[in-house]
Image (tube, rainbow, N blue to C red; front, side, top):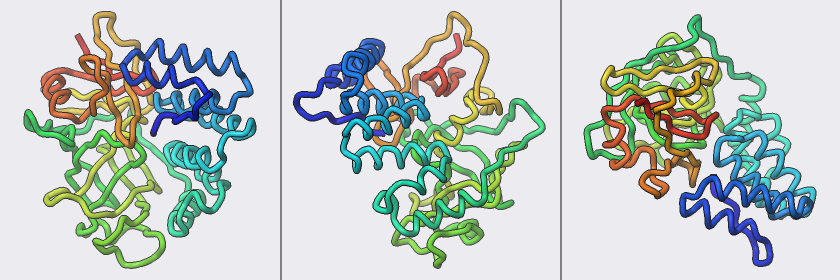
Length: 309
């Protein structure tokens, strides 16, 4: 999710500058102060909404962006931002109410199917453990591998730091042929195809009617699980034990007092953390080396990666 770009004369830009430098608390205070000082200023309200959405508060962010439009913010820019947020929330009915230009025709057919076939998640457990194999030290672009089942077929999937997606299936995989695709057509390697699976299994967690895509992936990669999907379950990665714990309620107990935390931000379609004073991809080799032997939780509700002592 890109942060607000404001025109000259609007000044939540102070918050943008502070956030870029990693001064998260000061930046947040500036966004709120600008919106409070000028409550009907569309740029200030839009900037606060974009900031909160990028920090994981999607519903509040969407409300503020919608209000910014009512106060005169550029409707096309706001609708593009709302479209991304509604997809992340699975609010397909809201997405379909946006003007036709926000989504391509095939994407609108996809949204209609998803709206008519609500996603469901079920499991007898409060915490679901899945096997996890960490990446080799120094590798980039992936946090590690997990085993998933899509429409009953087992796949080894890379875990990415991406936002704005759930699962990406290789268009060369036999599993891709089992998906509902939009518009209905043969999957080929020339484009990304909007799709949905009847089921996704993460050990004993079953998700039905899940939105995903089929597309060209790097050689040897059958599927990618985006962190946006796992983030729903406040995943705790334990590289030494080789597990990821999914908390079905979406939250974890308060972390130990001695734990460390890295603030989280959704920037340009990937989750980044504030590491050594700079915003860095969660899947970067530098961060992955740091987390390699540590137990850590991706805690979007608390807007941070929590590292156990």
